[in-house]
Length: 398
Image (cartoon, rainbow, N blue to C red; front, side):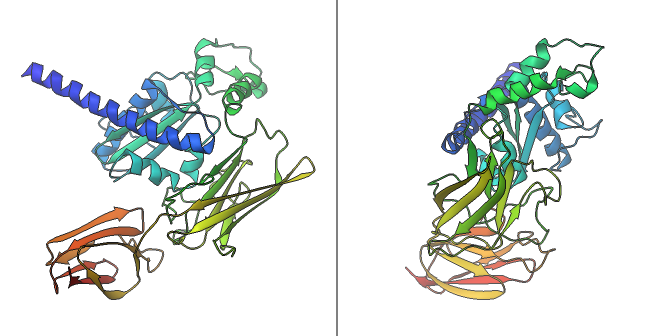
């Protein structure tokens, strides 16, 4: 029996390792297109991420904080958990999501946000650990040069505090500010001058912004997929100014959008090099969009332009009340559910009724459903939303 348990534990460990490896391959491919170096897997960050996923699985709560005494507690904050797992540096970034179908969807969900995306695509970070347990996914990132610096640096009681920073495992261990900046620059110089997302030429781009906590937008905001721009400080020693970002559709029309900057960020998370354009409406499927970036630097004007293509939904139904549609068999289509107001959580308690042979409904992001149906003429299926909306689907026949 004991031998069986040991084999089972080894098997589960292999599943976690394979899952993490798959996530890394997928995410590093995205980073390559963005112009970032591949992240290297770090077992300590992986351990910290896994323990926190287990903690969240026990509590059922998605949170960056932990409470002592709870099962799998490993530190109150992400930096404490990373140090507990063996990292020598507290300069870490933690990204969390849940209820995703797989690792790819977890990463895509995080990239559909603003704050989490900037964390994932930071030009300062080069090592990471990915974990998945139960419904929860975690990705923790850090800087390998800072980790090494904190490992070798000795505590000096005669430090002048204003020229040192405290980012090491021991709070009393401080490193010179210039050494800290040099560690960041050693990663920055390997990455692109400007990190933009969606990246130029990207296809199958999602249509909508994904909810995140804290949220950079009002609670009732239902908008399009964010466009993010980050200037790499290593290549932009003179802070870019007069930054303007515009989004145009395939007809050249400007898409109404809100530009989020360090100056108007409600949670003060963006730095002076980061900008996010938030379209005020969900993007259209199968559409080519163009992004225009203009800025001034050192007295000179600069301009960049690139395009991306949104996801190809062959058929999409917008649900904002009671609706009946007629479809052939088999059929596959998407449903976008428009929230009624700020308090409307459209995906809480969907109720399904059907007489068809096949009726499958999958979540796609925070506003969309993917529907597959197959049946005989006259058979039906119905989706009832908690807010009173309903969609009745009647089969026309094969």
